[in-house]
Amino acid sequence: MRLILVGPPGAGKGTQAVHLAAHYKIPHISTGDIFRANLKNGTELGKKAQGFMDRGELVPDSVTNEMVKDRLENSDVANGFLLDGFPRNTNQAQVLDSILADKKMPLDAVLELSIDNSEIIKRLSGRRTCQNCAATFHNDFEKPKQAGVCDKCGGQLYHREDDKEEVISRRLEIYAEQTKPIITYYKKTGLLKNISAIGDVSDITIKAISALK
Image 1 (cartoon, one colour):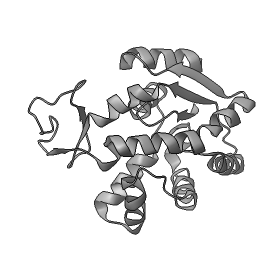
Image 2 (spheres, rainbow, N blue to C red; image 1 turned 60 degrees about the horizontal axis):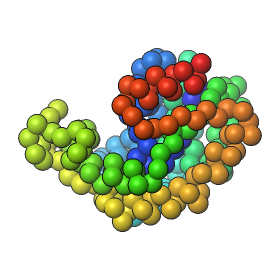
Image 3 (tube, helix red, strand yellow; image 1 turned 90 degrees about the vertical axis):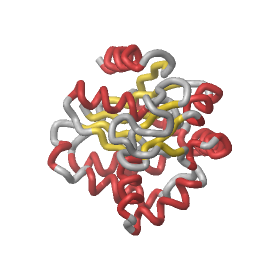
Image 4 (cartoon, rainbow, N blue to C red; image 1 turned 180 degrees about the vertical axis):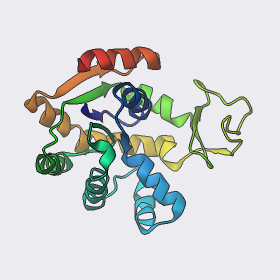
C-alpha cells in the first residue's frame, strides 16, 4: 500500500497514520516528525524550519521536497509507505508524482480526513506535548495521570507554539489557501477517498480501511 493522508491540521492524521501503517505493515513517513527531530538535534534544517513552524507557516517546498526524496530512497519503502504531512500543495504533489514515476512506485490511494474548523481549534489548543519524548496529551480528551507530566517518560509537558489558538487559525488559513487544492488534484486522478474524522480513533481507523479496500 502506497498511501497519502491529507486533511487540515488537527484532523488526526498522525494518530490514524500510526494505526494504518501498522495495519498495512508499511513505514509511516511524517514530515512533522522529521522536522521535530532536526529541531531537537539543532541541525541546519531544524533551525530553518523552526521560524516557519513557530509562526504556523509552511517550511519552503525546496527543503521539504529534498527531505522526502531522500527518505524515499530508504529500503524500507519497497513494500509501500504512508506519507503524512506531504504533499501540502499541488507543486509538491507534482514533484512527488515525478519521484514515484522514476522509482516505478505509483500511489494506491489518497485518504482525506474531513473535520470542521471549530472542532480543530478545540482539539489543538488543548494539546500538550512532552519536551522529552514528544508524546501528546490533551486537557480535555486525554489527560496525563499527573498534570504537566508525561505518563510515558516523566518529561515536562508544554504548549507548543503551533498549538496556540492564534497560530492554529493562521495554519487553517494556509491550509485553505495552499493545501486544499491538492484535494481537487487527487480527485481528478481517481485516487481520492474521503472519510469523516469525527468519532473514536478506532472507529475512524475502521472507516479508513474500509474506504481503502
